[in-house]
Amino acid sequence: MIDAATHTRIFKILSDLSAVPAEQIKVDDRLREDLGLDSVSSMELVSMLSEEFNLDIELEEAVATTTVSALLSLAERRIPNA
Amino acid sequence: MLPSPPLASLTGPPLAAVAPVTLVEALHRLAERPGPWLHVGPGNAQRVYTGAEVLDLARRWRTALTEAGVRRGDRVALLLPNDERFVGAFFGAHLAGAAAVPLSWPVSLLDAGRKIEALRPLFGVADVRAVVTDPAFDKAMLGEVAQAAVVTEPAGVATGADVAPDPEETALLQFTSGSTSLPRGAEITHRALSTCVRSMCQQNEFTDGDVGVSWLPLFHDMGLAGGLLCPVVFGFPFHLMTPGEFLLHPGRWIQRFADVRGTCAAAPDFAWRLAARRVLNFKGDLSAWRIGLDGAEPVHRSTMDAFFARFGPHGLAETVLKPAYGLAENTLAVAIYDPRRPAPDVTTSLRSVPSVGGPLPGVSVRVLRDGVVGPEGHEGPIQVRSGSLMRGYFRNEAASSAALTDGWLNTGDLGVVQGGQLYVTGRAKEMLIQNGTKFHPYDLERVATDSVAAAMAGAAAFSTPGADGERLVIAVEVPAAFSGDVTRTVRGAIMEDLGVRVDVVLALAPGELPRTTSGKVRRGDAAAQLVGRVDG
Image 1 (cartoon, rainbow over the protein chains, first blue to last red):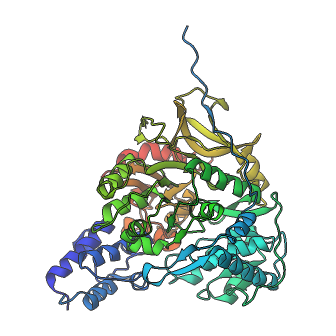
Image 2: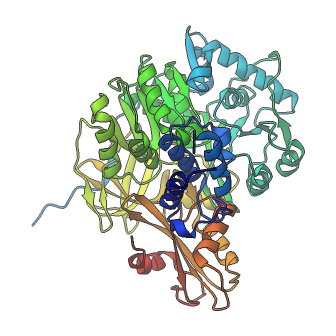
Image 3: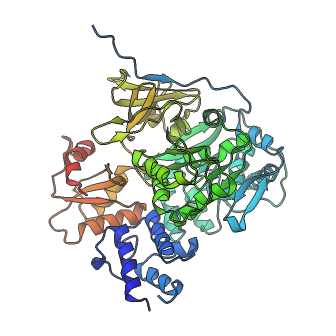
């Protein structure tokens, strides 16, 4: 499970990039269709996540991350003790 | 009586008459140079090719294309990512006597089927004999949509002979303007292509000691003529990265510069801004870097300042980042800022605009007023004349004659000539640009009105300068019966269909947009009226 602090930070990044208030972002939102992130900003999202949590995420993993829940499970898999 | 002001007309220095006349000749010369030339792939898994190996690769692609039925005078579409296959197949097409037709390669292959379908109108115009692509695309579907052979591998061994293209034969179709439903391909001859590349080389004073590092897509005019081809002519090493790698790890691009003592790159304004903002941990020396061209979208002074502030402490010279102006219809470059001739910004009603310098060698520019050359300082339509102009839009007589008048290209951009410098103050009147990609407002408007089920309603797409680059705005008339979240619906639909993010959605009442007497939305007037409602 992702801890509450990590969860909050991820939603903060999502909110900053999509300009959708964090409390309105739902776990099953799609990054493109629901949050309006284009390929550049989706990439930036994963990029910011990888930098903030010091992860080495590769391109294939980034392009496969198309929903908020996929992003959370990516974080869960990759962030130590998240 | 005051003297009349000088005319808004500039001519670049003469273009030095040096061989080669075609890029194919340049490739043959490149093959005689020893040492690594092309570097592909991430730093830890690099594939390196000498010029001779690239020529062999191009010949193997030429062989595969010939076996697929490609003949001299045909066209070959390239639907490929940034790697050696693009480089090989691009020259392979030329060696077969065919023109290359680069197509945009998506960052993600998740919706490859939709991508192919979206190319149907373009294939209808380009009439290609073959498509070179990655096996990830459905071969049967692509072949049906393109009405062409689909080639995914070069031949194992090159056979047959190279064609030496005539300079007046078509080298390239650049499909970067027009809507997705009515695509237009700028037809570039071998002479025009090499003229453009030589002009940039002369302006940038390239030598064989330079080192190029580019992640720009090769299907884009700036990535092709501005990234790949100057290194071909001068034989200097070229490090090819991918847009995905840059977007995910902007620091790797800058790091590569430090690692290989890179000297030159071109990128859209957003990319320099992204690198300045997103590269947090960087160690390395950037003092070898000479040239960073900032173009393909409006250039912001704040971007240049931020990039220098971020990397100046690592040895980056303040003169590296140079505003540039170019367009696919001129193959690419028209003007590049020269720091040896400094010029102040000009201020328009919307923002402060940096100079893009004077015209390149062999290029002339002028700014019109009422259809004739206007005075300096007047803002008007920019025209360009050069040896690298397109022949016209491929098989589109009407669009070609509208674009070319008496040997001058009507760029559709607005500008000012002042003190020997060109300032580009307004974008191509019809096109919107976001993150370096051009869009036709009509496409956005169509999807927006469809998404709120407003068949009779109107929409207007435009962009305005914001604090952090350009903001893309769509104003759409929403019928009273529509009950959903307008911003989410419109933004989501445009994203899904066109892959572009709209920054601001303005919901209007039906009939609120200004219209002509025939009922067409007056896009320019709408933008002027609504710009005050786009806050933040």
